[in-house]
Image (cartoon, rainbow, N blue to C red; front, side, top):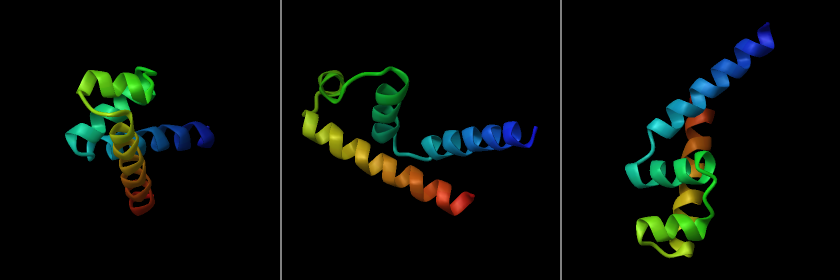
Length: 72
């Protein structure tokens, strides 16, 4: 039971972290993790280079880690 509660709390915390991202980072994270798009495909959708999408994703991941660290 405690493990299930922890997982639910972890999911809530990650969801909150994503919600606090800037719009473009939130879009990239959503397309990458939820829609399973590759960086190149995300770039095509957003009109960005694959390299730029990679940098946006890396920045978003860093922000999410920082958010989780501060709120856990």
